[in-house]
Image (tube, rainbow, N blue to C red; front, side, top):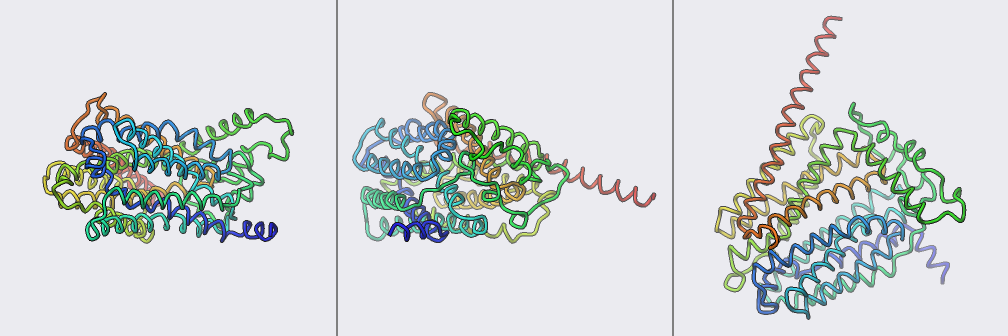
Length: 474
């Protein structure tokens, strides 16, 4: 029996199925689209000001405090224990949502939800530690697709139960609790990885895609350390675990990994291309997360849930579908991103800004819904392109590192926005004024990249003209 289990655990299909089941049930939370109406309704009886200025900011703070240590610990303990921690965090979150009351209790909800969010890195990194590089592309698509499907099903199910079956928000949260509990159970069936990206590396060839599995791009601004990942990582890696003395201390190992990570970051951010795409990633993701965190509060202001029909679930399902469609379309659009990438970042960021201004200035809930759909679709299109532009030049380890660091910077920016704009200890602005600030913020992002794109296009055309002139002279 043990041999049979071991054979199954070594196959890529079994761990992929289990991690996808975990991702589906942990994302299938039909109550999430109706969190603000639930908190401000008779179940919790909180004011909109308490929810906006005192409760929701706690998620941002806890997420920021936990993200970096969780990122390191996740790799050190090899993912599975962190997936179990994520399941426990989700269960505690929904137990508190169901049975606790008061501002402090709901702040505790946001803290545990921040912990669950910080541990998501384990979900996306786990599968690479148990399958070969031959299956990376396939299992990545499975893991990401299943979460989008689950989010869509959850939003549609929540809307149908509320609108057609008159199910209470309390019972929606009970369904979410059951779903995240199933995700926790799935975590127990995951095989324990024997290696990880940074702390437990068995062999470089196991963790790095071969030359035929990584699409290489050629550019003058690409650093040699990023264009030759296999050689670079081999040189930087230092002695393998087998070569280290048996009495090596974990503390020195952590220090060695931190030094290597800092060197990899320095090398990769020395590329202008990676730097500018990463800058947009961090700035836009901070604003995107801020909008997602408070959009339900704005909807509740435009159409109070106690006196109006609530269509949050339908809107979220549509937004997820549009986001998936634009993400897929990005893979088929043939564009010279080196030349026009920054222009696209500027134009679509300006469209995001316009959507947010629309949501601020209109009192019509349907216009707010439309603005949100356009905002999310534009962001999902660009983040897909940004992900590809960064990942295409890097090994799996360096991509994971830049992914984590870009999100960390985004979270720092989001925290600053929260402290200044949202928190009652800061300005504590009302929700409508907040969206005016967010629209101005995306206008600032658009301005940066529109100006930068004009400079880039002029520089490239001048360079091409100069080279053409030199060739004629010769």
